[in-house]
Length: 231
View 1 (tube, helix red, strand yellow):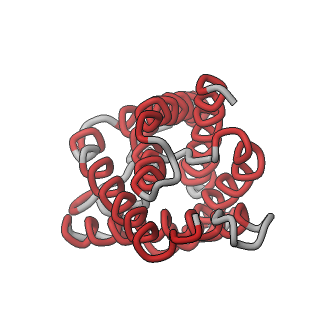
View 2 (cartoon, one colour):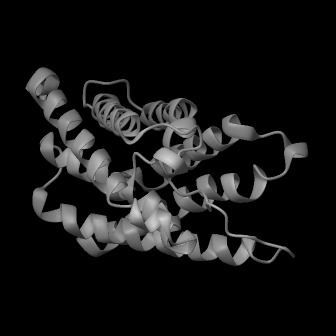
């Protein structure tokens, strides 16, 4: 399939990920009577990832995450020349989802932006975790996410279960890291809401580009060096 159609799929998938995951955090988690809490937000991100794996996986590979695109390229599963177009599409999808989410959330009387599901460290970490702790968390979890994606989509893996595996992996990642960074592991997801929050979220945005991408690169290289002999 041509690059333009695959880019459109990546934009669509990232839009859904940000709208579904961040939407659960911004809209539903604010209502204690719903009881979704961190677990509900984690499931929302996992479910959006799972549904997109099966909807656009056969079209674009369902990266919907710059760290994954970089990681798959490092792992020899994706051409380097297509990383930049994919990343652009992912960011566009994420920002558009942030716009839609802002439009919905601001329709409530007394709406305040707050952190708007933004990612942060230090004073802006949900649990007050340091920059170093946040970096370690985002690096390791991004690397493992790429490892899981590469393993579950390997031609020797059990066919048909990759979407469930990847979706559950993202759920687990959120269960671990929401208190630490509000969970990025995805620069497009971070960018999609940061500019609507403004201020500190934009100031710290570089961190949630650099660390997940480095983690993804290491994950891709690790899988390639250890287990790619059958590719």
